[in-house]
Length: 137
Image 1: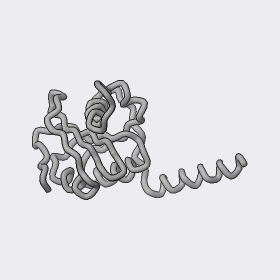
Image 2 (image 1 turned 30 degrees about the vertical axis):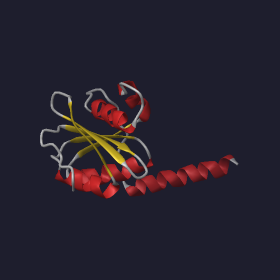
Image 3 (image 1 turned 45 degrees about the vertical axis):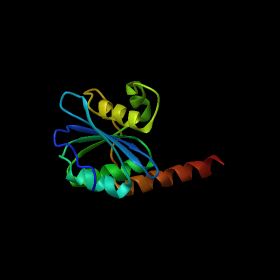
Image 4 (image 1 turned 180 degrees about the vertical axis):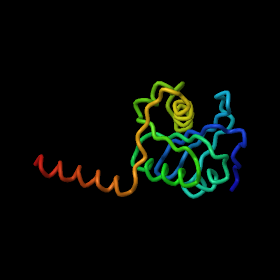
C-alpha cells in the first residue's frame, strides 16, 4: 500500500465511484489532513490500517456493501442521503470535493443517516421493488 492513513484522522469521507474511490480525512478540528484515491482493494487495505473512526459515504448501491465491510473492521460507518451532502460542497464539483463534503457532513451532530442494512434486507427491498413494478403494469 503506497498511502498510509494519517493517525490523527477522526473522520473520513469516501466518494464512491465505479472503479476509483476518493477519500478525504479530517482531524479533530475538522481540517482536511489527507486526500487520496484508491481502487476497491487498496481502499479496504487503507481503511484496515486506519484508526477506527467515523466514516461517511453518500447513499448509492455500493454504500450498503461498503458500510457493512467497514463496520466489520470496527469503524463507525454512516450513509448519508445525497441531498444532505450537497450543502457542504464548497467549490466546483469533483470527486475529491465531494469526499471532503461527505467528511464534513458526517461529523455534523444533527445529520440524518440511512440505516445500514443486512444483505437479506437489501435483497428483500429489491424484491418489493420488482413486485411493485409488476403490479403497476
